[in-house]
Image (cartoon, rainbow, N blue to C red; front, side):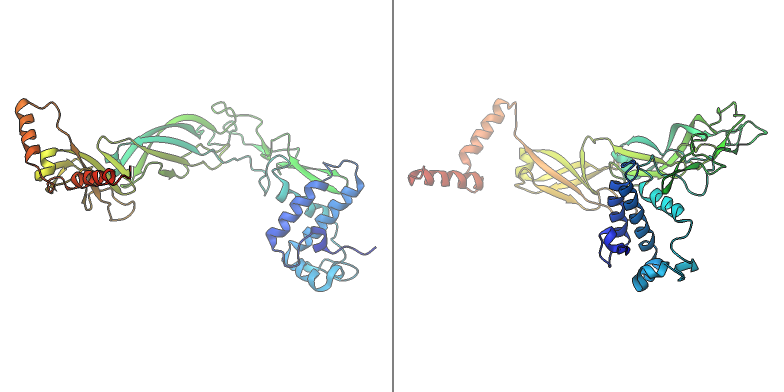
Length: 382
């Protein structure tokens, strides 16, 4: 019986790229995997057929030979890519195991490290939350933090073994960290149950760390916070996280910054906004007000005659520094005219006198609005 076209088996076009092939194989192989279809010979044959097709098409050299010569490239006396004669050779089951491990490692209990077990595992990444003031974000600072974490055991130098001894190769997996079991046509690799995938066992554990190669300790670290950082900024300290098991590499430490609300300023990127209440007389007659700046100083702002509520004044370059640059944002002063309260008799008399002497040019907007209102009702539009 003639063999089916490999592209047809995977259901892809002849122009399919590597990702298309991988996705097609993953989707089809899950459905016919022998573990999901125990005792089903058709499913086993179908899975074998899928693996054979994917093994050829995922390899650029094999695929080129197949595109040119078809199945003949791997049959009879011809030699396929790499000079191997006839079919796929005796290591096809092994290559199928590699394919299966690449695509379904997570499905079968997590990906495993290649290259044999070393007993060493990377330490976990750690998170540290730090709150700073807006002024500290403006100027930058160097902070000292204390972090409880796991560090390498000094007694055993991180090996986990009693001083004077060392870990030995696992007899169950011969140091590979995984064992193979044949199931019908193929071989399934699983994590070694004796060493849990480490490839090594410790016969005499270090008493200081109980064989882990690390102990818990509080460390003091210096963190450089650059000027201009924003709320939510993340700073990475490489290899300052949890120590790895049995001498493995350390994880990283991530500093997450939050900025305390400020009494006067609201921040928008590099710009700062400050709400400043002014008296009615200052708004009407004009004048000057002194306002604070984020660096703790103060600046003088001129208020023009006739200033109204919500008027903004821009102070160039008085905002936050832009991270990793020499630029800075601006500061915006937004005034709010305050209505007088708790008037004395004399003040009331003066305001009443002012009201009597007012004309349409004194309050043009209100005069214009109420004139339109009167016209609106007089015209019968109400």
